[in-house]
Length: 248
Ligand SMILES: NC(=O)c1ccc[n+]([C@@H]2O[C@H](COP(=O)([O-])OP(=O)(O)OC[C@H]3O[C@@H](n4cnc5c(N)ncnc54)[C@H](O)[C@@H]3O)[C@@H](O)[C@H]2O)c1
Image (cartoon, rainbow, N blue to C red):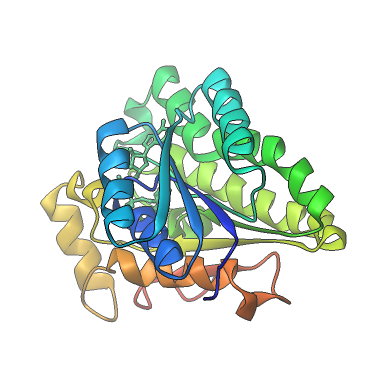
């Protein structure tokens, strides 16, 4: 199969888009490591994958906590010995006018959506460089490309992740490491369920395809960037948004 003998680390894999990605990687032969702060959900996702005769293991990580990220990276390398694919997928925000946000909110949003992925990448990158192979996919957001009402801090963090993707792609290329970025538009996940109905309806009206994305549709793009069909693609940003954003 496409990902036979490859180890795929998927943060945020306990839910939504990255759960779908974890399931797709496992179905395509990868050994999947789900890293997530939600232990029960992460363990349940991995148990369901194993029930299908596929390989998945949950390991805890809180991407807002430096020590937890260090422990996670060490546990991953100890348990699996290598990482071929890293999906920086965990993310969160809460729709709030910028003027009402405070430092604690900024820190959580920026640590989770930007600094955490950088920290984890830095810890796993040396082994990828040593093996001269790696596929890194960062899950940003269209908010980071074109902005989003009520998601100002999140948009800044996700825009940072896009810049990080492009620059790391330049550094990684000589080691046969590709780094790409998927930007979901409004997607029907538990995160979207937190968005007030009035915004959800506005999104749907604005989307040319007139519906939210399915988690599996975004996962398809993640798996493409992690797979052999994208061997010569790096530093790219792909919006998966039913046509909501077409420029920027
Ligand atoms: N759903 C959307 O409409 C949408 C749109 C644009 C971007 N995104 C991005 O897509 C990614 C996946 O989102 P989703 O919609 O599937 O959300 P989700 O809430 O279904 O899944 C997010 C996962 O991240 C985990 N997580 C949260 N905080 C964490 C932490 N501190 N440490 C480790 N894990 C943590 C959660 O436990 C959860 O399993 C996120 O990066 C999100 O920002 C989603």
